[in-house]
Amino acid sequence: SQTIHQWPATLVQPVGSPLSLECTVEGTSNPNLYWYRQAAGRGLQLLFYSVGIGQISSEVPQNLSASRPQDRQFILSSKKLLLSDSGFYLCAWSGLTDTQYFGPGTRLTVL
Amino acid sequence: AQSVTQPDIHITVSEGASLELRCNYSYGATPYLFWYVQSPGQGLQLLLKYFSGDTLVQGIKGFEAEFKRSQSSFNLRKPSVHWSDAAEYFCAVGDQTGANNLFFGTGTRLTVIP
Image 1 (cartoon, chains in turn cyan, purple):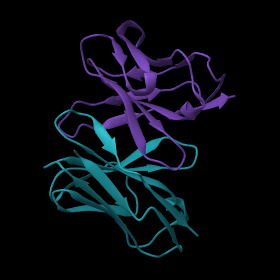
Image 2: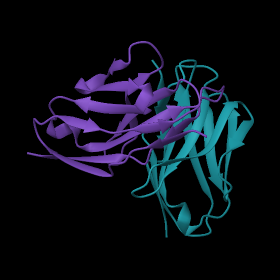
Image 3: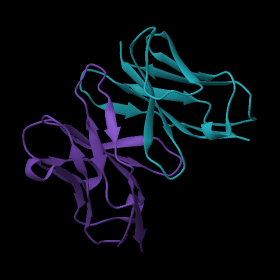
């Protein structure tokens, strides 16, 4: 069966510091991968999606970036964090069934 | 453009009572529709989905949803709510492109009173 992992689970970072969040999927090949952000009390905002290695589409202009160095690995990065980057970051994958399955999330607090 | 509206931000029900969470969508073709549930600090779990066929869809944990094309709705129901159902519920519509992107509503927070 397929599983999706995210780490770290929680992260506290100072403003201006770099960021790297990792997401990996097991048990499937060539998945579509997604990064969402969920701000406190708000819905999910799609940040990036990828349909293949090295193929990244950005939905919202911001100081974040994403990369897909391997088929089942998706990384969310920033060179300099802002206070507004705080939130709950969710990774998801989908295959041929058009259904997205979510990871456990990373809680990011920028101070 | 695709969009989803969940008009109820917060709903409170008594344990054992019935539940209906509303979802209205905007989509140009026959939509793919989803309901997800999120417990505090957790990821999203798929409750059920509608792609085609029978408009009444059964999901996990005793939930069901009915697709009504004439009303552009996909309301989630449960006949008897349990305290463990307290969570945030999200409705989503899929864009059916190769990227399978989802457009989410803003969610409905469910509180269950003992």
